[in-house]
Image (tube, rainbow, N blue to C red):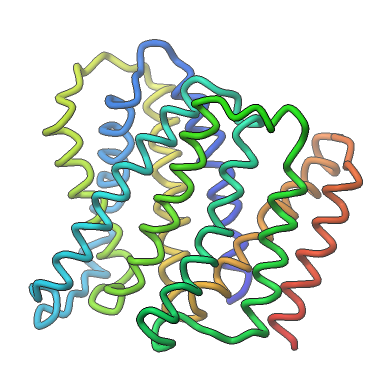
Length: 285
C-alpha cells in the first residue's frame, strides 16, 4: 500500500504544473479558475461517487461535526485563492520552497492536535514523528536558494496557501470517519464550487478544447491525490502518510535526471538519500 501515497505525490506534482499552464492565460482570472476547477472535479466524480457513497447519518448532523466541516470548506477556499494568486503571477520554481512547506505544516499541526485532542486520530509515535520532521525540514532546505529569500507578496501568498491547506487537511481527519474518502471529497468540492460561484459570479468565457482538457486533467490529478491522502490518513495515520508523500520530490528528481537529462544537484541528491532513509526507518524500524 505504500506506493499509493507516492503515486499521490506524483499526481500533486502533475496537477501543479497543469495549474500553472492554465492560470498563466490572461483571460482566466483566479476567481473564474476556482469555479472551473471545482466544476471539473465534480464532473469527474459524478460517475463514481454513487458506488462509493457512505455517510454515517447519525454523526454528520451533530453541531460539532457541522462546524468542523464548515471550517474545512472555509480554509479550503482561502487556501486555493492564496495559491492561485501566487501561481498566476509568479514562476512555479520561485514558489517551490513555499509549497514544500505544506508537508512540514501538516506534521507540526498533527503533533499539536495529538496533544490537544489525543492520540486516537493523530499518532504520537516518535519512530514516525522524528523521521517525518527530519524529512520535512530537509525537503524545505533542499529547495531553498538565495533568490528565494526575497519574500515578495506572491511568495507570502504561497506560504499562506500551504498553511491553510495543511490546516484543512489536519482538521479533516477529525470527521473523516463519518464518510468514505470519495464521499468526503465530493461534498467538500461541491460546497466550494457552490460558495465560489455565489461569491465571485465569474463571467464565463468560451474556452477551446485544449484548455478544457487541461482543466479536466487538473481535476483528475486532485481527485486521485486527495482520495489517496484521505485513505492514507485513515489507514496509516496523518504523519506517516505525509512522510510517504514526501517521496514524490525524490521521484521527480530521478525522472528529471533520467528522462529530461537535467543535472542532479548535490543538495537534491543529499535530500533524496535522507528522505529515503527516513521512510525506510519509519517503515522498517
